[in-house]
Image: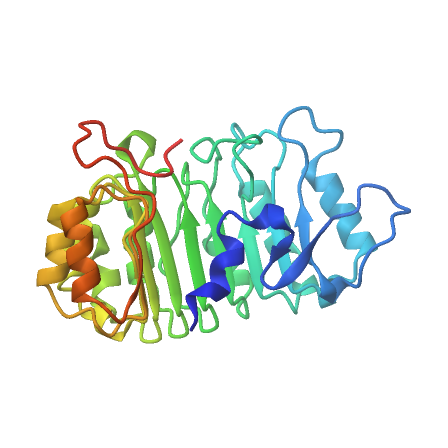
Length: 317
């Protein structure tokens, strides 16, 4: 699968598209003219601060005004005080009315910009019920790691799973590796930093790196980590890598040590794309990578000073 298919889900919701559909906002008034239900990715949200109505009220209006049997994509933004109230009530609303969304294939939970709520402030909850209630869901994306939970499940249809966080709990990482995802092609985890709950270690990645429960995986992103060198070293010998088309070790504190591990590990020449953007590599190491992988599209943009003692991930708070 072409990695570019997923570009519209990474920080580009403001450009007006998600899952290949233009974004439409859930009606705020009863008389609004609306697009056809199947021609839009529907965003349902209320103001994070001082909302004029509750999320429940806006969701109820959405159910009343839109033919939800035709809805293919949902984007869940702010649910009022998302920095204090977790997403469990939203999850219950969605799963409670799951039968009214038979065509739903893409879901983004917590799609808030930093002006609305910093990523580390977003209070999430157990998102497993979403996978259980929507067996035909092909794409699940979640922003925010505080309070985030996942239990091991089997899901036959899921093709894309992304967790955007400033700190991804180790329990979620282990659960992803324990899930049975026979159709999953794109897996992306922003591991984050310990200050914001990113307590996963390389050992917690074992289930993912083995690839045993991910037979269709073609893109793996283990990104935004303060232990990016250790992650890279583990990836260098991971069985799952041999079947990948693209690999992302970007957004984190990747130094020459981690890049050396990648270059001296298993061959990466089969990859179509290697994403290392936001890194701390020396010019000499960057050139070594280019020479070693001449046929691979390599992203080495956003170079940070490798001599800087204070190193940071791309997304924390």
